[in-house]
Image (cartoon, rainbow, N blue to C red; front, top):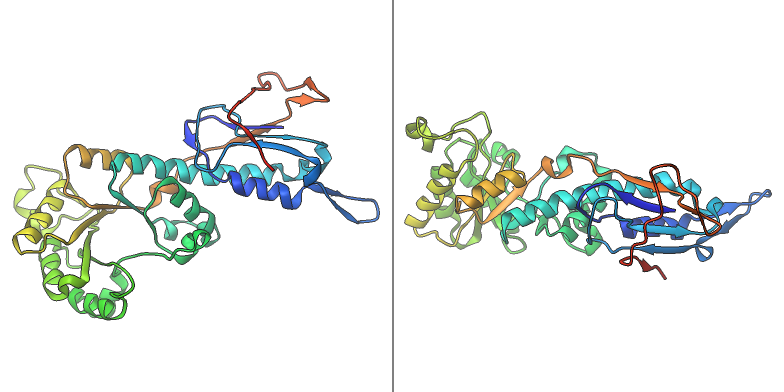
Length: 316
């Protein structure tokens, strides 16, 4: 059995796929007894995170087909999902050219995908994930920002919410504060920085794509003013620097993908960290498995053939 996909990508889910074969290969006898089958298979595979070419075999399985035929849908789906996430994250990491990427799509998908998706994002180069579940496979913890919900709970007072958050968590995490609650990112950033001092790690710009921040109202004829844009980032950075808060990081989020990050980087945007959400779990990266050799002889459907890949390594 030969497994491949059709895009340039970063391979995700291969360790899970191997684990599925190791744990679940086998067959049930007439009396109902289960006989494990892993030891009777020969599996060759690439490694988690490897860059892969279109149609390059990423795994081959040799053995009695009855031992693993029932697992095809499971391991292919695993490879498809994790490779999709890994490819998308790797693309934004490369676009950011060394700047940190925070993986923020947890709220855009079913909670059961968080553990493996977070691992794929981590291997692909994301610096932080937003939930403990996403960080659990490497023993990490989720990171986040002072959220709009907490600010609302403090009557819309970002400074009060940020202060309460810092009192509780500043000794265990980087305190980053959303500053768009009042649609006044410059003013709120300065107020929070003045109030928290050294306890503030960063401010997060997250202006809605349908809004124009107050700081840009006088510049609307010269640029596309909605959402988080280059000019807004520059204004926040300049204001923080002028007020003596040069150490405070600027986090940009809200509708970012690889193309938008490349635009910001080409313009030398003073962004320290990009928070990227739903774009990292969108798209497709389907895998296919074909029987290509039977009893040592070529046997594949028309249009498919066995492709020798010297990069594959025997799985112990």
